[in-house]
Length: 271
Length: 333
Image 1 (cartoon, each protein chain N blue to C red):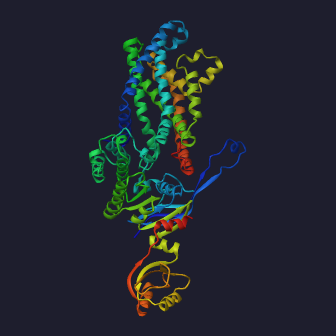
Image 2 (spheres, helix red, strand yellow):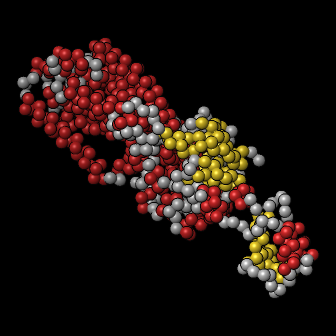
Image 3 (cartoon, one colour):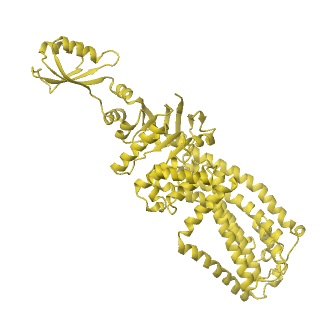
């Protein structure tokens, strides 16, 4: 096995064994996905064709629209919370020191600790989409899979940067994570998860286009539901790439600073 | 013999929690000193004790050497590497045996825990499997290896912590109160393991933090006594006894001594440094003496020769050591 995969796999194995040992929670997570899909299906029947003009750029079907939105927004949520969550868990459970005296650097520990959350989120999204298509008639006739994957990767990179900055806050301030709170709430309200950005007042639409989630959702819907080509996706790909290029290095610097401060203050394992 | 670990004028201060009033009044961060100008050296292959009451600064020192904390001033050197600049090189060479049972994953088995930490210490999967099997055997945990950590007794958890600290076969081991919470038999087994296997056979350098005087006395070749962040005494037990007491004490049982002989002895050792136990006039059939000498200036052999020349019969002569408890009390009081 490639040496570079050994540590990520060790973290995945650790988290899988721990999660699977809580059997009821494990099963209820899977059941939860089914009920979410069912909820969105009935919501789409309620709305019917009432908001079709707003949904026209995305194919006109609210169920497909909202399912794509919720699936992608779950990546936003996991990216924002998993890094800070893994730090916080290690502080609270008491494993952080044991991890930090190993020969694995802190950024590797943090990144690998988040893998299981991303993997589970991806599984949830796959189940979401498969259920949507097979059981509820989600419309995926001509998807641009490569474009969708590229948007997904850039989305994860941009959001992970924000998540690592959140982890830096947790490293220093322990609880109270302003960045996470602001981005999470603004993104859910303005990013276009449940409704298109076009329904917002003009001035709020301007704010919405400052958020990476807006570009992610729009690009993902256009790629999956309308089959837009790479060139047509550029207005969404370029801002996402910009967010990723700016935020990721900044987040790594911030995290390194936070660890140094915690080591100087002696608060590395405080919670 | 080389130097394994060196503390050079280490000072560490922790910021105190600020109140909202402090923040609004823009008061600077208050800091509490936990280590002040601490210096000592530990030679390769030595079993060194860091002794002090709770809150003395022992754990802070160990965390600095294991790269979990940075000193505010001074240097911490491990095998020639500065912990502030060469953290990665230091972590390759040290093993930190963390006694806190929360430092393990409770829903993983002992073996799964060790395999996980082995991979994080850059062992390949096959190396990890072999090393973990060896350490489970070494610490007597083979038969419990596949039980969840949460089902272990305190003693088993401690043994697993020792196994984890040895995963990389480190040259230098830091043990922070390894016998805390153990029953007397488990504590004795752990001490024997440290002394016989780690230091005796494997020739590892061990730095042991403890507040148990008997443990330090029975295990450690050299000791640093830390109190309220300051190094109060440092050296071999004998050096520390002498530094604290200033004298060496001997207990004698003699017979045939006359009062004039005792008076002569009192003139040689003035200042109440000779006691007759129980106090009183010497008796012909024998009595006990306690004599205090200044090492280097007075020699017990000269005193014994004087007594013999005066016709005194010496029945017993032994060094009367202060216990480390007494030494420690004198240092910290």
